[in-house]
Amino acid sequence: MSRTGRAAKGFVTSIFQFMTQILVQALLAPIVLKMAGRETLGAYSAVMQVLAFISLTDFMGSWALERFLGQASGLDDGGERFRNVFTTIRTVFLFCVSTYSVLVVIFSFFVERIFHLSPSVTHQAQYALWVIAVWVILRMPFAAYQNASIATQDMAAVNLIGTCTGIGRTVASLVFVLLGGGLFGLMLSGTIVEGFGYFFYRMRFKKMNPHLMPSWGVPDKGLLKEMLAFGAHASILNLGNGLVFGSGNMIAGMTRGAAMASIFYTTQMPTMTAYNMMMRLSDSAQPAINELWGRREVEKLRNALRRVTRLLLALTLPLATGVLLFNRDLVVTWVGPQQYAGTLLTASLAGFCIVVSIQRVAIAYSATFGWMRLLTTTAIIQGIANFGLAFLFAKLFGMGGITLALLIVILPQTVILWQRMGRFLEVNVAGLLGGCVARSLIPLGCAAACSLLVHRLIVIQQRHLFGLLAETLTFVFVYAALAYPLTLFDHDRQEIKRYLSNFAGRSKSVPRRLARAFGSGSN
Image (tube, rainbow, N blue to C red; front, side, top):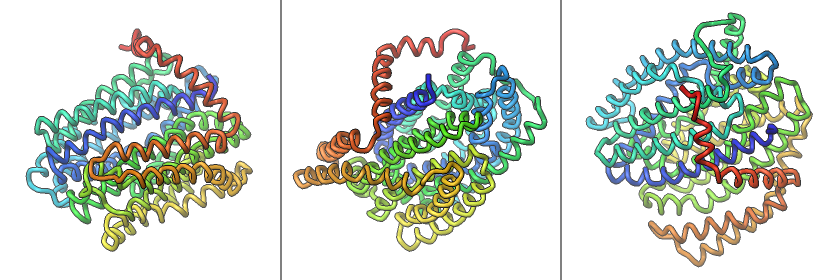
């Protein structure tokens, strides 16, 4: 299968993954609010973000792992370098997870003070954190197989396992909450289901790549030094990105308490879920980008940049427009008007979707090219700036100020990276981005006008699901009908037709493919 085909396959299956997650997540928040209350939902969102920060003790990071494995997969050496990279990282993980476990235990003793939790919720959070601290050590033998499968571009299987794991996590969360498990049940459910996901990632990788299975140790000390040097930059980069993209719920909890953090969570969650689905396009292309750079095929990299950017903006521009039009109605219909954080947060989310989509592409290419000093410097500066500015704006403007600060601080890095990437690949950045936006204006304008016409006829009230569906479906169908001929190029349309035809044929044999994927040779 071609690189484009593998990326497209990964992208479409990832959309299926996120669509199923959206459906089950739509059930989770209202039930948690009803059965456990605002404080539990807000505490869950804030505590999980702190755990994401603590996970930065994995200073190699998935970026380093996928970069080195992805470039090694394109070498004609019988998989020797791939195995060496995989073995080295697994060994380093032993130190990383031990540090993570200790820090989680330490955090458990401060969680009440940080997020102003009640005694009962504090105890549940502490018990769950202690279980997680033990679990991360027990899962160690199964670590990194998901990243290895991504590096070998087995994206459809990765997304299929991710879909099942995501559904299982949400269903388990619902069961624990309905049984009265509260915050402890929410956090524990993810830990249990994650174990099954790790097992299936390993099973799939071993079946598809038995000759690439890792061992333990450091087979190449020179390689270890190279990976540590890259990983040091990557860890700083991840810290900066975490302060930017993974701190909203935490800041809301620290400045306004866990109950208000739940309002921030429910207002931005639908948009962020849809945004992450869109970003799967660039994620699915990343392994192919790594391979192309490993082969130094610059012209193909240039073409891939144009295509990924064009397709990504064709998805994120209507997403941003839809956020402006429908986010309030969606939140009110979903969890009630008391869980909506206001217009400023919605407008900031719309701007964020556009800017961060093109930033994501620039970061992916910059990491592949090894521009880690530039990435880490700009990431840590914007991370510190965002954390401080978000605290200030949260006090001045409410929860909408948190996302407004995020939108402001990501602009400088985006501009810097695109300028350098444009010079390096000899691409007219202004022409590329301007052309993508211009080709989307007519479909967006017509779609917005039609949905507003429907809105004049249907007044959205609390829990008025069918009125909201009428508006959003009108927008989606009008945009898709016009964007297909006006926004996409001929080869984009041909690729979509070819893949959808193949995907439809394969979908008829899902049970057989599942059995083949995880059948023999999986022990």
